[in-house]
Image (tube, rainbow, N blue to C red):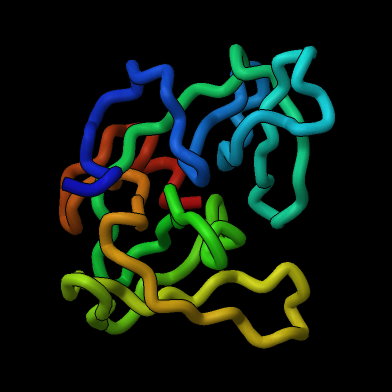
Length: 154
């Protein structure tokens, strides 16, 4: 279960918070939903990495592959509703494990979200593992391509 780990980008259905690349400039943004101010224009509201908001046409949003987040990952909060919906599309560092209580206990991770103002303390929340996705990365010690090796040497 969960929202991460699909390994595909073919789905046209985007979940709020899902990381996407903007076609053209390659910028990473997080899809938040239809832009309420411009429904006729077919624009979507997105969160930029710096926390600001923008609107872009759905045709320019390319969903990125994701995997389930683990302890120590930088992850995106996705598919949250209610009070926690404000975390959708925000990037945070996954820390200690926790348990969400309710009708059934669910595994979760304490997430420390990047503050938009670096002089403010980070927001910390316990979120369900099902609502956290990370971008895939090669395992530690994996061989590099020649261009990756040059880039890491810089």
